[in-house]
Image 1 (cartoon, rainbow, N blue to C red):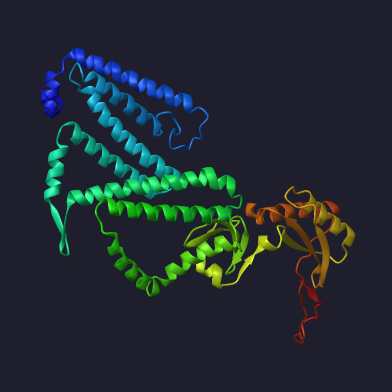
Image 2: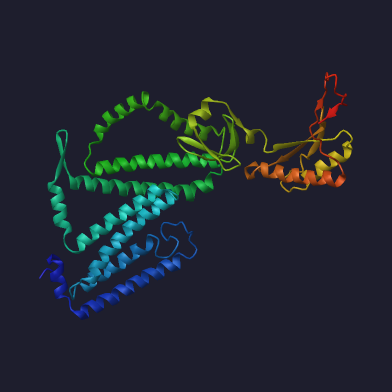
Length: 428
């Protein structure tokens, strides 16, 4: 009797308790061997590895090894007794391997993407439903039913099964392309290309090329005539020439910025009055983060066509100033010493160039002093540093008995009533 042709209920009725215990023992042994191999080889692997993952069973290698050992055991046991548990285990490990593959690739390529997590859950549900249908023997009739349902696209009719097969093939090929591009970026580009911007453009170019090749392979696998894509390419060119020209300009500008390296990731820039550090250069836009945490999304075309001040390109030292007004009777040298000591006491203030204090103006309220100092890490904030220095200046002036000038206004009375006594000038 052909055991593989029986239904799930018939198979279960023919399996004895002794046979089940043997299969369970063999299955436990296969899983234990797979776990031991993964634990042995995964001791020194990085936590973001696709093969091993954070824990031993999180990576792709564990379900693949468990699938290999279990399938070999299933073939051996099938020669002398019916197999049920190992057959179910093979389908479970196949599903687990597919889910682990997509999950690890999406996590490696898009580590903080909510859409990637949603796609991972969707793939898990689809794979587990397919595995359950295959275990209970309902998958072939479901696929046959999907093959009977067709949709019309012009003069062509396509079945739902063909669409499903195409989506699965495209997803698998694109995931493999993303995996290869991520591996090239981590293993090759990270060591060969030290410049972060050049590494970014190389990574984007490799990923775009592999995704294009993967998409062409996926379309060819489901029977799509690739010569028909020439019409689509012509329509896309017309669309780029009219409605999508701004979008295309931003993408082209992104590659130009990365290739020219006029601005790079980590540079401090001023764009349209917004000053901050470039945290990332995407293919369409650039992220600029200010010292107070605010982040600006700047289209790449604006960085090419408008005026951009690259503060890091000119000098890695950033000047910060603070002003103070003291009374006219203050000792100028002592005030300058207090200002300089307050700046030098802060560890973030650079010693070269050294802080300087100037007497700028003789204003009506008193003597106006200006303190200049330089920092190399403006991304950590400048207002907090200026505040700490101002507090130190205030304490130093008070300790030295130097008063901070307060605004003065003179009110003069031009005339008084005849019955009123004259008043002296009032100083407010």
